[in-house]
Amino acid sequence: MNLNIPEHILSITPYQPGKPLDELKRETDARRTIKLASNENPLGPSPLALKAIEHTLNRIHRYPDSRGYELTEKLSARLGVEPRQIVLGNGSDDIIAMLTRALLKPGDEAIAAKPSFLMYDIAVRCSGAELIEVPLKNLGIDLKGYEKRITPKTRLIFICNPNNPTGVAVAKQDFKRFFSEIPGDIVVVIDEAYIEFVRDKQALNGMEYFCGDRPIVILRTFSKAYGLAGLRVGYGVMPALISDLLHRVRGPFNVNILGQAAAAAALDDEAFLNRTLRLTHEGLDFLYSSLDKLGVRYFPTQTNFFLIDVQKDADMVYEDLLSLGVIVRSMSAYDFPTFIRVNVGLPEENSFFIEALQKVLS
Ligand SMILES: Cc1ncc(COP(=O)(O)O)c(C=O)c1O
Image 1 (tube, rainbow, N blue to C red):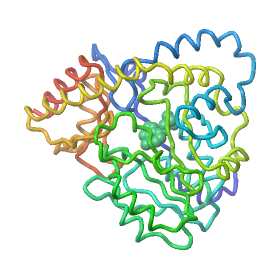
Image 2 (tube, rainbow, N blue to C red; image 1 turned 45 degrees about the horizontal axis):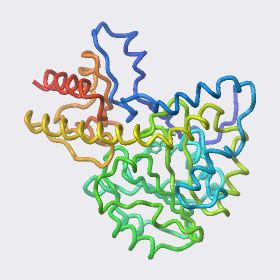
Image 3 (cartoon, helix red, strand yellow; image 1 turned 60 degrees about the vertical axis):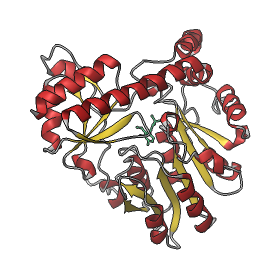
Image 4 (cartoon, helix red, strand yellow; image 1 turned 135 degrees about the vertical axis):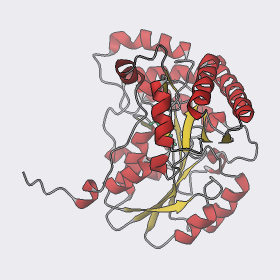
């Protein structure tokens, strides 16, 4: 069969998600299994979101509101931007794909860090454009390095703040300088999937730079702190000129009816968000001190996940942890051959992980 597939599509390596817990349960005879691999919320979904889903269930024979009126209005009031400056997505992945579809063509260039979130690379390749990857500096995004790689072909810049997989946030001061120096016609995308977890007061919050004039896009998601990863809801805040373009390439009903209702309710569930943040920060502090006691090197984070240097082949440590019922992520495909990435779980899951890691490394 000769399908004449474009070379830029053939060049794509499919996204490798964290191993699903059910898959491990099918494969292992370990008595207990936990997943600390996809930066999900270990508390489960927000109770208010669950109630909203129940109330919406009898309407799932209807198409969802194409633009998500209620959720968009709520976000607009909360963020102090106009509803037309918000685009909802089937996860923030969907917004990344819309941005590259709408803004890039073959021959264009986009810039991102390496390693960073893998969907930037996939989305840019889908458009036939080229992703210029700038190595991290001390595990953080090197904005000066970005500046050096800007050319007349640069249309889009991705800044993952804080960066996945390293957990390092961009410093306010660094972004201020960067933003004032780059050409004003390059679209700057600040992906803030983990912004709720940030504790460092010097870290950038992209919304502070949103004014509606400069082409800046802030991405946020309900998948992490709000506990709705399985429903797929994210959004982007952007000037109306850009949202108008995204609506042209957007799937007409890209955010499902349950997701819209759940996300709108989760936004009001302040108690759940606060519980999530407390659990995450206490969990991180526990994991750090446990690793200190074991003498294992790790890298503090501004997110709900962090990197651990196991000083052994990370793929082997990943497999050994799997055999003990623990799913983490090996970072070998991210150019960190001895690092694993782990997210904070419930207190008992964190202890279980530390015990398993101790066994594997001893
Ligand atoms: C940095 C970053 N951006 C975006 C996403 C996509 O999130 P979602 O599509 O679930 O909103 C993720 C998910 O892991 C992420 O780590």
